[in-house]
Length: 124
Image (cartoon, rainbow, N blue to C red; front, side, top):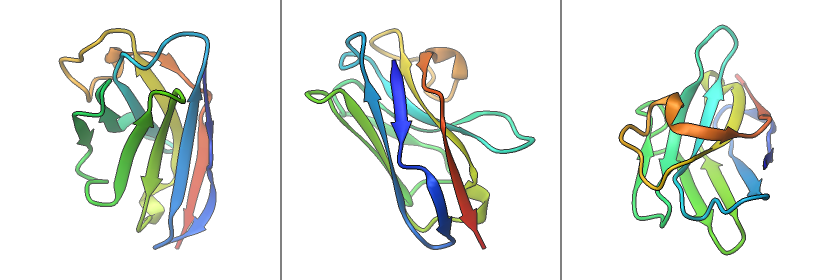
C-alpha cells in the first residue's frame, strides 16, 4: 500500500513537499516514482529513483525544481517541489515498480503499485 500526503494549495513560486509511506510489502528493493495527472492530460512520470538512490531521473518540465528522495529504512519516498508553476497543478501519485530495475523509467507500464494521489494546486 502506498499513501501520499503533503499536497495542497500554494502560490506560484512557492514550495511543497510530498511524502509517500509504503507498507504491506518490501518496496525498498525496487524503483519508485512520482507521477502526476493534470485535468485533460495524460498521466506522466515526473521523477523516479532507483532502489538504492543511486540514480534519479526527472521530466524536463521539472528538472532543477523538483527533487526525489527515499528512505528505505522508513519505507518512504519524498518529492520536494520548489519554484512551483501553475502548470504543475495536478494530482500527484506515488508509484513503485515490481522489478528491481526498469528499462524505461518514463513508461507507466513499469509501475505496478500506485497510491490514491494527492492534489497539488498552484495559483498564479
